[in-house]
Length: 91
Image 1 (cartoon, rainbow, N blue to C red):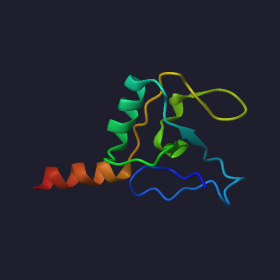
Image 2 (image 1 turned 90 degrees about the horizontal axis):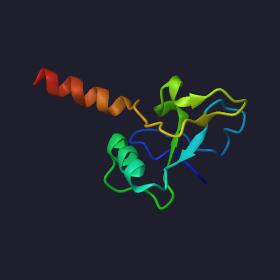
Image 3 (image 1 turned 45 degrees about the vertical axis):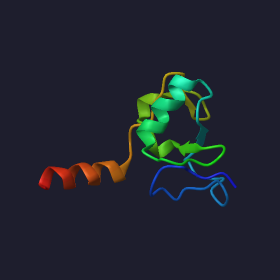
Image 4 (image 1 turned 180 degrees about the horizontal axis):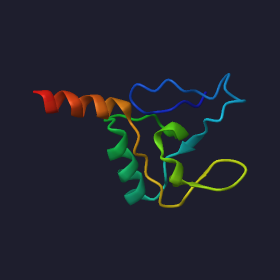
């Protein structure tokens, strides 16, 4: 069952067919895949990692009936990173 690989995200495709959230496979291009891996912040990823649309800004999508990422889209929304950054600022 496909699920989001982002740390702390519990979105999975099962039971969410009517959801506006979509799953997107990591790019096969090595450079772009590395960008996604770095943004995601995970050390170990599943065999076929995916990220849900909640980790992309609205401008990362093409204006089609189904959400489709732009070819150069990179995930940028990760609440766990915002929390970590706030904690390091307070230290």
